[in-house]
Image (cartoon, rainbow, N blue to C red; front, side, top):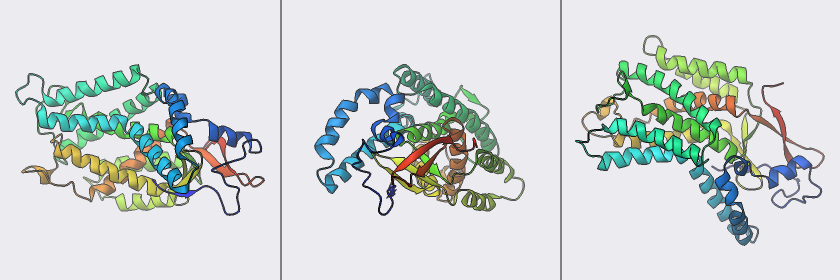
Amino acid sequence: MSGSSASGPGSPAVDQPVMGSAPAAYREAVTADPAARDWPLIAQLEDWETGLAQRWAGRSRVRTALYEFFRFGVKQAWACLFGGLMCALLLTTHWWYPPDAALARYDFLTLAALGIQAVLLMLRMETWAEARVILMFHVVGTIMELFKTSVGSWIYPEASVLRLGGVPLFTGFMYAAVGSYLARVWRLFDFQFTSHPPLAATLLLSALIYANFFTHHYIVDLRVVLFALTGMLFARTWVYYRIWRVHRRMPLLVGFGLVALFIWFAENIGTFARAWSYPNQQHGWDWVSPAKLGSWFLLMIISYVMVSIVNRPVRYRCSGRTGLHIASWQKIGDN
């Protein structure tokens, strides 16, 4: 993820602020890592990470950039923890799961996903708030799966016991992995926003998108209209994210597109592992159609709005008196 620094022209250097003169809200934002409050494991590594920062950062622009790139990668890996484990399970069972095992592969995947959830919660590597998000995504995803498999959009070619209709229960966890990622990355990068649309508008948009996933099989497909509505609603929205000490920014629509792209890559992993198949993959694996990127982009909107109900967007503003960018902790949509 890249983006411009939140410092404006003529503003003081935010990378090395004078802490005594900065507003209290800014001092807190620079010195407190929200991730350390949510995950004890990260809090335990703070001293090591501080030492690494002191050895690398601030000595040169190149070293600082390398440190931020390393920090960005670690944060993304932590955010992808559940999704990464699920992809690893799909590939591992595809290559090495015994075909004559008493427990069907799909059932093993369901039980393994439940086990991962239990271990992450027990080790406090996942919060109960994230678990609620995962449950919400599981329900929404399973309902869509039941419909889509009934109309032949894709199939699950292997037998299993733990299933509803044609849908193995592990599939809900694949949708939940997206929700888990968004909930975690939101706090890891301390997301804040400008010109964010109100919650009522985003809820309506996501409801229309979700309905179109069903209705386009019977009436006209409205996804072009939905793309246009999404563009209109989020055209002016910027997300501010913090890799280290300074918030950087990018258009939120670009963020949606990037996440949809990586979900598409993950979907190719899933179909390669024969976890599910599209009609064009019945006689051998092939890349998932790039046209699916549009579907994943729209599904990203639903996912984002669902997570925003739990992690309410916070407004980001610039203090004209100091030139420093600080957060206004009024939840968007509450005014």
